Image 1 (tube, rainbow, N blue to C red):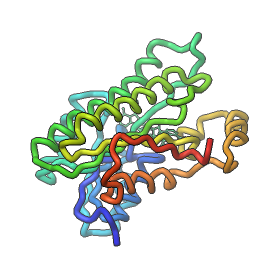
Image 2: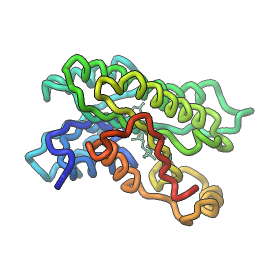
Image 3: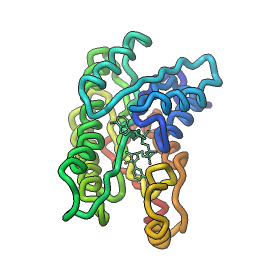
Image 4: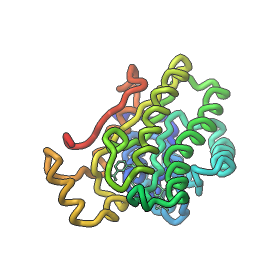
Length: 249
Ligand code: NAP
């Protein structure tokens, strides 16, 4: 029995990688999906891949999570189509701009913080206000951090700091929103085979693989299945949790 029938889910970064797999799996579980990403062609690709069941009513939105006006427009479009906000929010949009600390530009530092951390804040704040205003008292927000936000990683001061921020934003939001029936949890993926990881040099990838007890990278569906669990009432007493999905890394 599918666990998300009748639910509406927003997935940022839904045009690629983990976000795209999440759209597929939440749709499989019966949810209607708002696919949000900054490139409309990627949004359309994902929409086409989930459009098979006509009882579900999906929406594609071009949205830049780092810009409040863009997130507000996305909420407006959502309310126009569904007359309610989503009760599931997956903050999956993210970027890397890797460089060693001594060479890292201020611009690359700011961009990563703006998308990964501020973007999670803006989407959570703007959509959750609407959830509260609409009297929805069973909602789930799933943020995507990273295992490197716990341990750090060479060449990723900006990214690691942004993801550590996402983890603590999650824990704090869970304390503020729990009594409203809004659960907030964070997943820390390890190395997951997506376009983001394809950009890492093969030599570095091999080094990482050696450190993973399961001796392989994960795939996007292996994160998306955990997201689906956190979205559903099967995880109804989980709030403020950090879940590592790393193959033991
Ligand atoms: P991905 O394939 O690159 O997907 C990320 C998506 O987010 C892309 O479609 C990207 O668009 C979009 N995006 C970037 N900036 C955006 C913005 N400002 N507004 C809206 N959308 C934006 O990467 P992924 O591996 O699936 O990553 C998904 C999440 O998992 C990220 O938060 C990432 O940090 C996290 N994560 C990934 C791994 C891993 O090993 N893959 C590990 C730990 C955590 P563009 O392609 O146009 O940039």
